[in-house]
Image 1: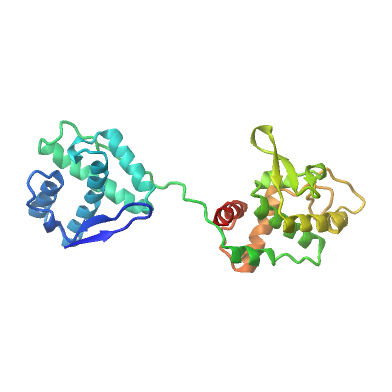
Image 2 (image 1 turned 60 degrees about the vertical axis):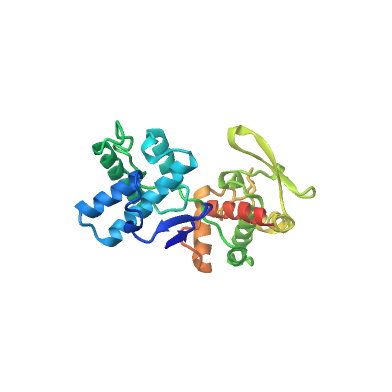
Length: 279
C-alpha cells in the first residue's frame, strides 16, 4: 500500500509505507541501497522509512529529467538541492535529505554503479531567505487604529502607515518625500527610486485624505516657526524623520496592536503587494 504526500506547488509523491516495500525490485539503485541498509546497519524501522522517503524525492527529480539516479551529475544534484529549498521544506529537513543523498552515492561508488561520486561534499545552506511575511487586511486595520490621531505626532504616524501600505514605497523613499513631490489633486506622487530614477506612484483615496489632514494641521504644529524641505518631520520640528525613527514607531504600534514583534516596514510593503494581487 502506498501513501501520497503533497508538497506545496508540486505533484503528489508516492511514499513507501516502509523500506521493505522497495526491496527486491531488481536493477533499482535505490532499492539496492535500502536493502543494504536493512541487512547491514541494523537501523530502526523509522530511520529506514525516512531514508526511503528522502530517496523517493531524488528518484522523482531524476525521473522528471528522464534520467536514472546513477546518471545524475554534480550540477543535477545542486539543482536538486535548490529544488528542495524552494519546495517549502525546513532547512533542517533539506539538510537531512542531502545527508541521505551523500550516503547513497557513497554506496553507489563502492558498488561500482558510478565512476565518481557526484555528491562528494554536497551541502545544503544552513539557512536561506524566507519569503517575506505579510499582514492580513484585518491586521492592517488594527495597526492603522493605533496612532493617537488627536495629536500631531499621531496624525503624522497614521499618514505614514497609510501611505506605506497604500503605495508600497520603500521607507527611504517615504521619509525623503518633499512637498513638491505630492500631486494630491491628481492622486499621485513622485519619488526618486533606485538608480536616482524618478517614478510616479498612484496614491489611494484614504492615503490622500490623511496626507491632506497632516499637511493642513499636524505638520505645521510639528514645525512651529521653523521650515523644512521634507514632508515628514520629527517631533522636534524642522528635522526630517529618519528610517530608524519610523521603524521604532511602527514597532511600538505593532506591540500595542498585539501583532508580531518582528513587524517591519518591509512587511507592510509586502502586505501591500499581496493584497493588491488578491483584489
